[in-house]
Image (tube, rainbow, N blue to C red; front, side):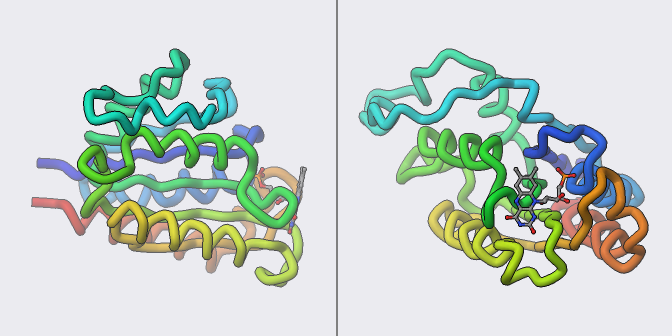
Length: 191
Ligand SMILES: Cc1cc2nc3c(=O)[nH]c(=O)nc-3n(C[C@H](O)[C@H](O)[C@H](O)COP(=O)(O)O)c2cc1C
């Protein structure tokens, strides 16, 4: 069985830095036989969680919001590893990433938790060279807490400073870290 990796892109820039780094992770994973799918949140127009709590009723079958997040739930359930790739906007994840994370509430709590034991990783790009000043540390900490709550394994974090779209490709060290993360994630579930 090949390892199945789902990449969730949370930048509006399809050819931006976080997408370029995510593509390198995919290359690493595919180099050792994994299969992958990449989804681009910005085009899905996912609505924010409405806090209705209907998803938490014992009889509930997921989130009641009828939008394109519904097509992501089965992909998330099937994936061996999930990678969230986001730019830092205003010292935290992009709005697209945050809306996506909020919508995991329907499938991430108690008996309904589909993430238990799943491998996760996060990719972040930001303009300020200092990860503290940029706000990247806030996003990393938030993702750590999210994984802990979901009982998922946080298997890697790759992050780097870049501003102009695609500029991250010039940072060979970070790109190599991305490649190695992909290999690592694929190896975790390879049979
Ligand atoms: C609305 C907006 C807010 C931003 N806020 C921050 C920030 O708080 N800290 C930072 O270091 N960079 C910030 N940036 C810069 C981006 O994080 C940086 O350009 C990043 O590489 C973009 O990644 P992408 O190409 O994947 O979209 C911001 C950019 C935009 C457009």
